[in-house]
Length: 133
Image (cartoon, rainbow, N blue to C red; front, side, top):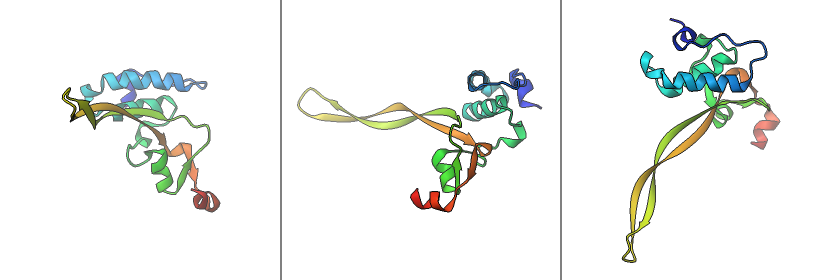
């Protein structure tokens, strides 16, 4: 089953821009549960698919990583590359005044954003760049 046919995403034109990829990613994120994949994975597949990368070449956690993930693997993101922004809800402690001069620590969720890049948007890290990093 082709991912693009499931979500109704048409093949991108030669002049496809990042805005089109972002719209495709939002559509895929909404309908991800229908095919049993996570919203993040659906968004990544739709985003990079709309940029012209084949669906079988998109493997999250293998060849789709964050900026620091690529540096750890000895690669660097090419300057000017646009990545797919994902979000998660992360529990963080929050101090609340109890009105009696004390504080209560409560756990609340806040959004946490990160950007992923495909391997085709990276290049090998050169030795002098590696020393500077």
